[in-house]
Length: 462
Image (cartoon, rainbow, N blue to C red):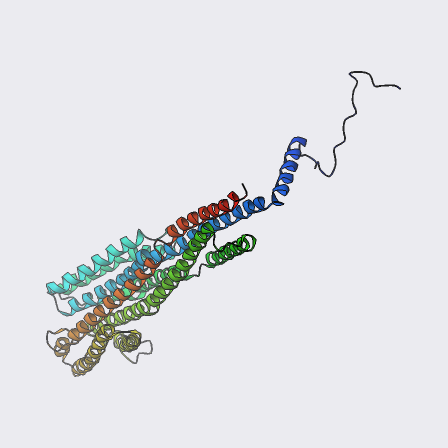
């Protein structure tokens, strides 16, 4: 029998094509195989199955906490934006429009007063311009550079000094008794109504749209968190039922604590988000809807007042396109009709007496305003310009007094609805506050309780 010589070469062993995939080192393959075999061996015993189930349950609880924390953090951030960013910006945009419109109205009133403009009128005009400029700067710092709001702010910043320059020219000519002052005033009004106020209106629409988006984001149901919570609770109940059937023990304190923690998170999540949704829906359906209508009403009252003043300034020089009527008088009539419509809607939206009372006062003042306006127009049509002027800007029984009552009532109504919105929106933010942190903490405690409960069962096998 012939034996191979000592030290001779051996024929290399051919790797198994099934157990040795191409490119996988044999040592690593051996490690993987050993681990797989060990895992299969562990899974065939009850202690091993308990360890695997416990690890999976703990991971599920932690994942539930992580999903809830991330999802509710997003909702809470949107709710906070509603309170601290988008709604204040929407209100500021409305105020920019109002200050600009009031400046135009006040400038016309000062022009009608004659060469010596009353100090109070001049002070009010300067205040309106300064406040509009301040709010534009504030809004500019809170908007993105390439947004629609930023473009409208840039337009207003460009046009504002042009407008004030035209008003100063109108005043200078008026002080000298030159009729050119009226032309400058009408041109300034065209610049305001044709370019500036539309830009301010678009700014308001953009900021209100952002408010609605933030509110909608905050109201979205956290479906992933709720689904994960139901899954975790189901898994924990199944594990406790399994333990009961195998050991005949009713309770496992660790698993029971984990179930309680998960239940608290799910309940907190459902109740907190339900409350937040209800509060935000109330804020938008009542507060913000009323604010939009009341802002429209105030804007229409300011436009109507400016057109009423310009009717006397122009003295019939500006006609409608068909030449049948005075353009400013026609615009006044349109504005007053819109004002009445807005007040009627505001009355329907007001949900308490504190909200209804100022709207009713404004409606009554509008009725008196229209009656006085008709008297002033009749006086002017008879050729008594000075008499009509007193009925428009006089200190007793004038349309100016009626306008002031309308404006004061609308300001009161706006303040009330702003308070209603703020209260509801802050309630929504408060309902979500603490939930992300609480969910994370309870998830960690629940996972730890699962491990403790499973280890308690494992100790019985030692």
